Amino acid sequence: MQKLNCQNRGVVGNIAQSEEKLLKELSELIYNSRNRISDLANNELITLFWRVGKRVNDHVLMNRRAEYGKQIVVTLSNFLVQIHGNNFEAKNLRRMLQFAELFNTYEIVVTLAQKLTWSHFLLLLPIKNADTRVFYGHKALKESWSVRDLKKQISLKAFERSMIADSQLSLQDSRMSGEFKDPYMLDFFGLKNNFLEKDLESAILNDLENFIMELGKGFAFIERQKRMIIDGEDFYLDLLFYNRNLKRLVAIELKIGKFQAKYKGQMELYLKWLNRYERKEEEAPPVGLILCTETSKEQIELLEMHKDDILVAEYWTELPPKKVLEDKIKTAVVEAKERIEKSKLLE
Image (tube, rainbow, N blue to C red; front, side):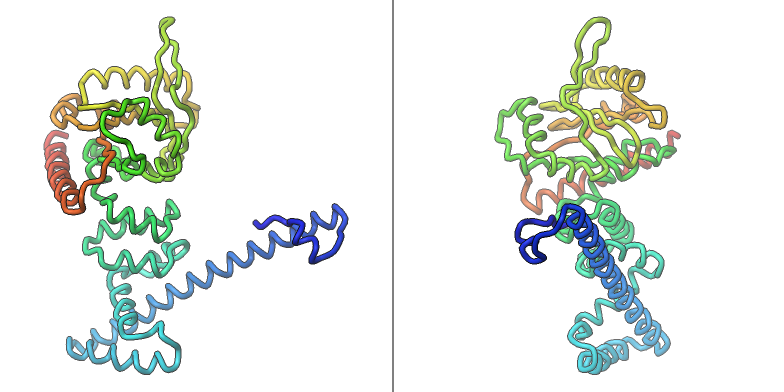
């Protein structure tokens, strides 16, 4: 809400303190109402576009002629533009048809339209895979992504990275699905070669907003270098977060270099301590996330770390060229699918 400043007061003249309080309350009512009107207008516009697309699709289907479909779009567009404006140009009308075809359930459209604008949907329409499209739509809704955020997450393959992380989870436990990624893109820190763990930790704390955006907006920062006293010895966890979606503490350890098996024992100790001394009654047991510059897939698989709610993920401090990124992620996705199929045979 906008605050009343001296300039505001100059408009209404001198007012008593009680009147200023009243004016603030009235202003808040007006601003909130304007926001609701804007949301309602957006919702109505999107559902209108969907209904237009659905109606034309149904009409074309009845005629069962592809050429007719192309002709009717141009014909309808010419008339609609004259009456209702440029929103209904042929190009936009085709997008409405595609919109209704890809998002074929009205209830889903209404739900997504609560926070997503038409510009969001225009980014989703070119995505060919239905699961990928649904993932980005629901993530944008859940985490209140702007159009810019959504575009960035699509370009950085957030869906594929989430799938790779999910391949470490137990098939019977879907609670953590979609909450983690592998790898994490930390290029925005601008770290150069030969940085230390403390440099990475400091960079994260100096730019928590971007780090949480990469983790996911369900994460909330709690503490750095969390001290744990065990048998009279001091132990320090790099970073402690809380995930609101999971209702779980998330212990994060930062490692330079390749994953080593000994990291599992260290994280297990931290999680057991947190479970005993920090976890609240209504929370699920803590989960661990070990971030390394390189993972060791076979070691992680043999250690069955998912049974102890521990995930391992790479982090990249430099973003590779687009083609290299796509190839790396594609290879990792194939490996992740193979791990999932292997897990199905074992469980």
